[in-house]
Image (cartoon, rainbow, N blue to C red; front, side, top):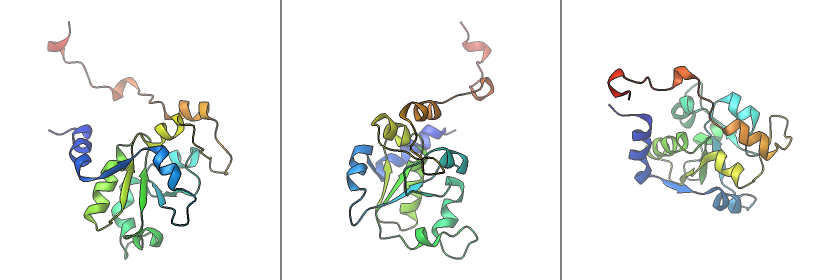
Length: 160
């Protein structure tokens, strides 16, 4: 059985990754890349890189192609454009980059460390209204908050 982290690890050698500070340098240039945020809408609404496009990971494949209700023309037409894919921690973006490459996108890059790393480097994030998000607020938002039922059960034969 493969776990989520196994899938991410298998895709890593097949894709390109860049750190937030490398991506920051590219933003604002004449040939600025498209920033594609693959988090869920509620995450995107809370905070994001200004000017980024939100397409949740679950809709990505149909958003990339023409002829579907989920088609996003800006993305479907961008197969030759540089696309930086972001998520919270840099895992969903790896899977998205791998998938997009399979679909013929030539310049996709996953942002290593995700928006957590972007915030750690104190790069700007905005909320749904375009207002700047404080670094401390973003730190709290990006910190995983697992409920007990989300943790793997302890098997009786492994307890000490």
